[in-house]
Length: 327
Image (tube, rainbow, N blue to C red):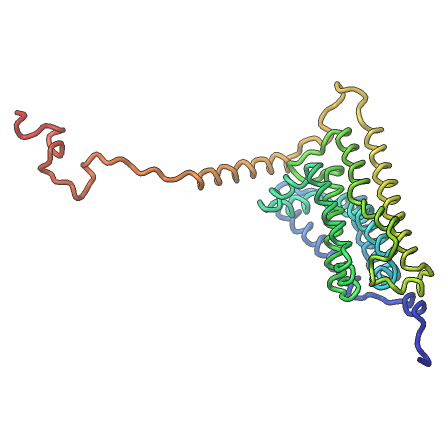
């Protein structure tokens, strides 16, 4: 067609993504407003240090980079490698930045509801966390869901939030920050990171070894990134595997390097604060209420004197149990 715009030009054309940046700005302002409200109403207000504010802001900006132009546009329609890079950034960079940047009072407020607290207690066990992250990351890369995110901006946003949730679950056992849930010992954290570097990205071997493209949504990758769909898929496999292995093994090395040399030096790395004590009391109260609700009410035994239908002439009804002949 005369005057048609080449695919490469259309794919790299700048798009402002105003809605995306407006949502990110609104979310940041809402977090700041909620923190100020919690500070005003708390008996012992907790500050939001500047370093954490900067981490939170960096995480929000990085979300915009991942979902906006050009990476978000390439990941949506043109390249599996771009989609994998986007997911890796959300899991390995955005999630830890947001976790390390949120204020303590906001995290405590968000995790206080009983269903959320109970879910976190179970999910943040290292074996369970590995399974959850693997299921979520693999599930969001199913061809049907990839095609859906290619066709719908709402689906893209929803899947990005699900991937960010997986990244949050991945990093919580390492960073902690949930009241009443202590971090595992350094060796357990290191083993956990090795497992997360290997298990959730087993799809990368499928990408590398497959003999045909698995995602029809990226059939025109050669027009934009100059890689045939099969080559683009292989690059995505290497990118996924190397990014997880390099980042998580590096963090595992740092965890081990900072670990105490002897068992005598092992102590609580995260000193217990009032939020931990309060959360433990809340859990005890919830268990107590649950036990009371489960215990059935026992019927009271009647001695006959309180029975409105009892015959006052019956034996034992009058005279303390003596009959009329007992005189």
